[in-house]
Length: 415
Ligand code: HAM
Image 1 (cartoon, protein in one colour):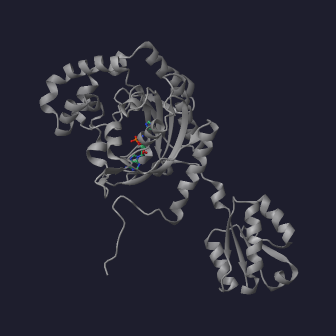
Image 2: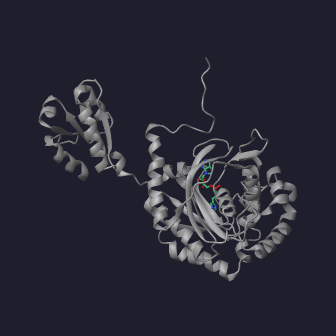
Image 3: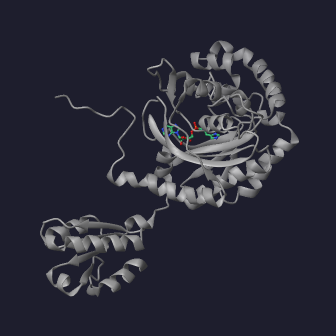
């Protein structure tokens, strides 16, 4: 019979890979808690209309990357390509759009992109949304959370790029100058950029076309249209957080989603190759009203966990602490299970691998060594009779000691 394989760009996460999600979630949730954020969980499936209205009809996500299908009721549904729209939808639906919320979430997102290193069709994001906060200290708080991630995970060669897209007024003035400037270049645009020019000219700024980039470099810059308050915000970010992370002002940064309004930012690392951006976010003051809610200024970001895993130096030492507990006969198993249960309940940081099969002691020791165990707890005939356990160290000194159940419990608690 033909074998069934997984869908392209949706890899199984397996064995040694699996830990990165738990590890990153642990570190990130601690950081989020330290900023007094609450966790939120929205469904993976939403009405397609939510993403059309939020990320925008001109975004790549809605144009080419969304996974949509009709359900049995002919209702168009989509797998979420990102988390912000669902969070805002949920706050509006619960009629909580008149209050402030500091939220974080984590989970799988789906985009029909061409798979390559660091780019998948199913990937995991952790995100933060501060809802109901005007421009000002919430922008600094968001960058402060980003900063904590940089510091705690010791990110390699990471740079935070920031820009400000202005308010409605500045944006209009800038766009009218940009369109004037683009007139002489219109005929040379490729199809993709022509569409951007017609539907959302701001997105021309992040074009991949080298000639157009060069042309735009000499054109109007959004920074020259910003108000003193907006410039001041960019300055503050650099002066407060510049000593913890490398921050670059990048006036070509516009981001791929249509909902952004003020501050936008992206973190990149040269270690990631072509897909160098691992974190992105910004202010989206109009999204709530676009989705039928009240005025609710907001700012947030999301981080790609697969990309983060490629660049973090931080190693969770806990995941190295493996102990193998072995018996030499099945008659000991009931007692051994009782002891294992008791040990785990006193220290959940240790991976206690129980090996109570009929294999020989030699084979069990070999397996423990292969697993990278620090110690093996052995219950043989003698130990069983004397209510003890032998602890064998796999360190260089290789010591072996016999301990009573009470002693081993104390030993286990302190590892
Ligand atoms: P985004 O820049 O589209 O923003 O995605 C954020 C991060 O998700 C990226 O920096 C990247 O690490 C990861 N990512 C995106 N696409 C893929 C992919 N195909 N494979 C692997 N990783 C990927 C957002 O999603 C916004 N919702 C962020 C936000 C929150 N803005 C305001 N609040």
